[in-house]
Image (cartoon, rainbow, N blue to C red; front, side):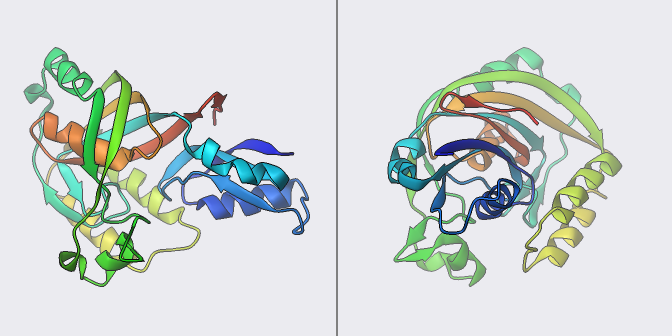
Amino acid sequence: MRKAAVWKQVGETPLQALQRFRGERCIPASVPMTYAGRLDPMAEGVLILLSGDECKKKEEYLALEKGYTLEVLLGVATDSGDVLGLVTKTVQVRLAQLESEKMERSIIALVGEHTWPYPRYSSKTVHGVPLHEWTNKGALRRVEIPHRLMRIDEITYGGIRMYSNMELHAIVQRKLESLSGGTFRVGEIVASWKSALSMQHEYCVVTISCRCSSGTYMRILAEKIAEKLQTVGCALSIVRTRVGDDMMHT
């Protein structure tokens, strides 16, 4: 095996997915392995693993175009941009407010190049320290959040669905419970979602599929889609369906 496309599960880190694959294939520890590209703990999907001399081509694999299916929860914002975050704002959104054709046009208008900020909870370093560490220390105000060019090549609108607060709570709870390594503030996160989801009975979730450049954060795209629809939002689910020509299904 020089290259393998594996399915990173929700709750896993890329390193844990690599270690799982190494164990399943009985690959000796003496064989060098690496993963080409990251996926957030709350995301799942295609992850490229490299071994041996193929590890030297990591940068080539990192640059490959990606494909995603993204669910955007409207009316709820978090400090991480996904469900692994503290709820910072809630806005009531009713399905009647969302005209399907207008919504689809607004979302498709995001196709193109954008200079958007890195998520506050990301591994991007500033002065040698990852942004998530600046955020955890409460010192983010001391640094300027860097921006990067993110390119959306194609967006396909997949429709909208209503979830009851009980359904949504079950989804969020299941994702948080999947975290194999835990998180330092999981108690706070659970409490903030419990409080937020008690505010109303139904929630709108928009589904889109997209092709994009390497380094395009779906958490940021979720927030930008919500902005286009004149509300707030976060990523409810992120599924990477393609890396270059490699495609997989659950």
